[in-house]
Image (cartoon, rainbow, N blue to C red; front, top):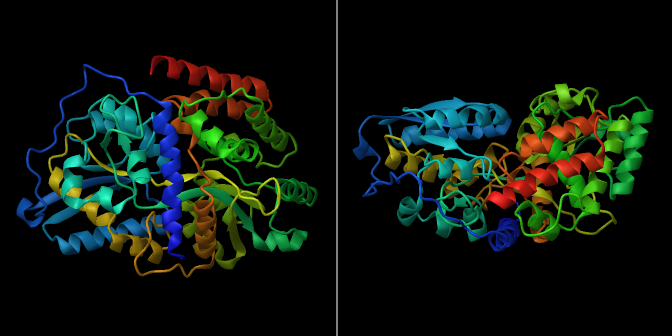
Length: 452
């Protein structure tokens, strides 16, 4: 994996956060719960005595699962007095249950709390997460990570502004949303990986005419449709405009390019390019079905790559979404994985901080590469060997060099997944027009901006 790649990636995220910070102004809150940050920080894990550290994560598939299992084993080997009680849930299940768990009297010690206004900012506002700045002073995360990455995991204490304030999490993996393709099916259909959106549209039509499912797609959770829409939006709108729109710096969801992206998604659905009854198929089932041969293409995150590589070997390829013109830079959603955070009521915050430091260390980046994942920072000594991960790394490098990272759309408001994702489900089934869907998105967005 080329060494300059990671530096470029962080520059991309830094640019995003610069827009974010300029777009919003922090508010104030008089009812913020008191912080439970320890008065003194200890890095001596052995001194803590026998500890059971409860950790909730969403690493349930393939290499991501192997990665955290290996790191947990290494941590327990280094600190025999600590036993990790790991609770793993799918991303969707984690989002559904985490707030209730954090509000209880016996919450987990460490959790993966999603960035954005819908999750991390809400947890911070409710006093459910521990600010990590005192631990950063001894572990040096802000020295290890570029500012752009730590800013994405930072929130003001009132929860009104993401991108600045206190640090509430540290991430292990990088991620981008790109295009997977079945190499065997492309060869059989006489199709090449698309160099432009026009090529891609032709490929979809060819696949459909030959009886194939052009795009594997499951959308029970609504977020998949938002990601698919976001890919199309990045093809219609310049990256700076997308960044400003998501973080409240200008623009409207009803602007013409955004409506055109919705129209494109509607056209794909009407043409039969998406898996039939997609709204009844779970997100995590999509890559499983794709690996079984259901679909020629599939849009998805690099978090699926390790498992797909294991299932499909050299039959699967990965690329960035195509540009409008061949050879020109492209943009797509991405950044860093869910950050590891300490809960405010953890009985073992010092041990939790040591754990987070361990699983995000330079050595952990090597483990990420070894298990087929994409480390967020440059791995000091390992390079990917699996074919698909080499392609993922190449895509990451290209996106990084061109500052092509755009934010996930669910960052936009606390309720955007429902208020925009729900109408997108209707769009896919022909029960809503592109204009109606984008107006729904704008209504939710404007209401949030007004009261923020």
